[in-house]
Image (tube, rainbow, N blue to C red; front, side, top):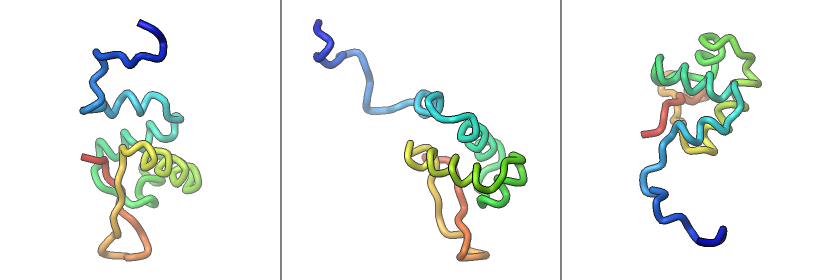
Length: 88
């Protein structure tokens, strides 16, 4: 088998979220774990729980959303904020 041929044993239908998580920065891993344990939270709540600064949380959430591990929706109590949760 050459290096250009696809590996037939790799299952691409159901990707493991922890595999893509290992390639992310430590702040993203921490934010992921906070959401895993605490459930849906706003950026401000994540910052308070993780003790990361707001800018770092914003960066981590962007990385997690780009990886498809986290989704966001409008926070109904305050439409200026978003609620973040783990992707299904």
